[in-house]
Length: 257
Image (cartoon, rainbow, N blue to C red):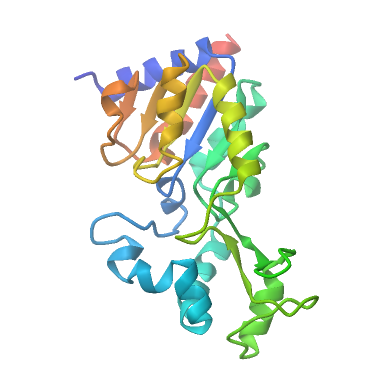
């Protein structure tokens, strides 16, 4: 097996040789900013709470108060989190003119905080609230302020429908507009870099397979193995923040040489 240095060298060259790169990020991208993921053994959120009780749209509608208590605790961690070295490395790559954009499973908005452009939040965002009746979207503070005042059924100020975080719950479909944009990005890309995703959640896990079928190359940086490791040109089982900045630094050095 090639050394880490060899893998960093190879991925750097893949980036240099590519013109239309797309990055797909999962929970592992944000754990390095202190946000817990969902499926890691022992530490994942679903090891602590039952997703059937706390993460389905049906459970939320049936008992918003119970769900909101858990969400406020997680939300506090998210709102305090800052972009890590990996997020900043992605923005640096984009400034080189090679990165089309980012497809993310994350709902924390850290890519935007790092000033990355053209981010498709496939699973929505916790920085917004959405009315389940009229579909209007509000800043999440509209919902938080009501909850902090004791309202366990936060409501829309226009139609009085139930508000929910504008993130996708289990049982909800992904937005068709975002899926179309993701399809367009994948169709254009010649290199897809997966960062911090186990590639277990569909339909997001379909994108690397689609990219490969269209002739794009695949690279993966993820602590754990994935089902697509054998199909990737480069696989690095290390922290993103420890490896991606080194890769981008090498790319920049060679481009400017």
